[in-house]
Picture 1 (cartoon, rainbow, N blue to C red):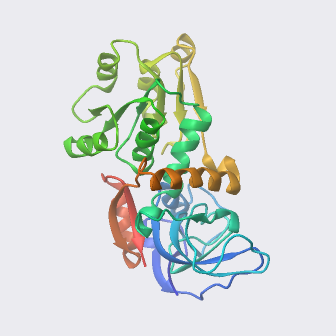
Picture 2: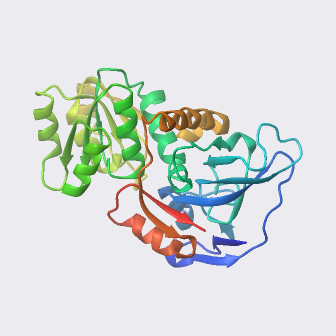
Length: 323
């Protein structure tokens, strides 16, 4: 089978499209014929070794995917050949999803929503589980609260906008440029601030009549924490789900002055079964028309280098690879 692997750490140039042996499912394993694999920032972190993983090169990248179950190993229950599934959580201790076939655990197999494509289903995994875990589990976002989604044009941000709207919150969001602003508004945001042309703090204060927001969903905490603290109500929550800079300076005086809660969140803490439960809820909402995955670009698996380069630039929604 074809797969995209790394034999050393580095930039997009270390991604190699090559032939490897098709795996066979062992006990408690499911072999999926991959129809689409989403590209995530964690894949870049694995590629550059900024997120060290137990499995060393050579290895196949990719956390998320969707496809058809090809075969199951001994002991597998509840998953059968022919099932259409989507999944997340590969590429850390296992081989990843950037391949024509991938091995997953039965607990990772989530039934694919019938009303969306494999490409759209692949875009659900990490993005929607992260958004759900941050907003529902960590922040406990409630009906009637006001939330600000920072970076709403990205995969996780666009998922967070939809989830917050579905939960009955008033949704403010930031995006870069008029086109992204319009598209985020279509996802259910009540107000969208163009961070390229407006002062976000001033706009949030204006839109909330000086009150601020109850929850900030933050995707780049190292860059935005000071601003986030200036935009929350007293006792407000800031959910921190990622940052390109592992060192974060916390303005302690400002944070204590507003009784801020800084909530750090990683959906991996829900474990495989917990993430699958979350994604089962997400899939049901997709089938009811309450959520929809946002795919910005579909790229052939053989052009994974280009996909990683696109991820590093300005883009909207998820980038998806297709074998």
